[in-house]
Image (cartoon, rainbow, N blue to C red; front, side, top):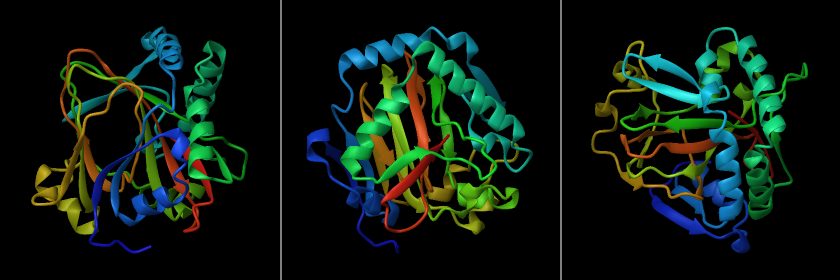
Length: 270
């Protein structure tokens, strides 16, 4: 799939519309910045899931970098690359057990409904040939004053030296569920610029992401998620989350991996 000059920004959908796999193709090709599903979850479901995960906030782990910090419940693969990934799979199993024990099945609900809306034949957590399961989701907590610096996500690039099966995917997308919106800030900044090897001169040493100069002059889509929004984007394009104010910005997220251009089957991980 080649990138075209067209770039529509935020497109909204309802579950009843069932837009089908064409949405994924548009995101992959860079023709569309965001696909936002409204009403995929009921307020009652969100309230229940929010209370269940908030009760586990003491388990959240913060990883600190020179220019920021990430507070999460559950593992994210990029933290362990390019080093050993064994701890990642151990934490994935522990998180899966925790979510099952407390009845936090938000990721399952979202996947089931997205699979139907997108017309996917299969949509399940990724698994290595040796039987190791990837984490199927992660909860991210952005507290007051926290900003997520400019970065891009590309497992095909980052996992290439590891031999992991995800490195052989063709495309990567991302799904985010807004469990709780913040009072101010917290906007997603999504730039229409993919990573290029030349961009490494802008990489922040021992920190998160890249200097803002790497996206200077690039088209930008700004989106402020509301509680209940389920949105898809192409994370291989640069993006950041602006500084949060007031209430925590709480999201659940997972990546979507496509093994080919047909977008009939997908795997997920965090």
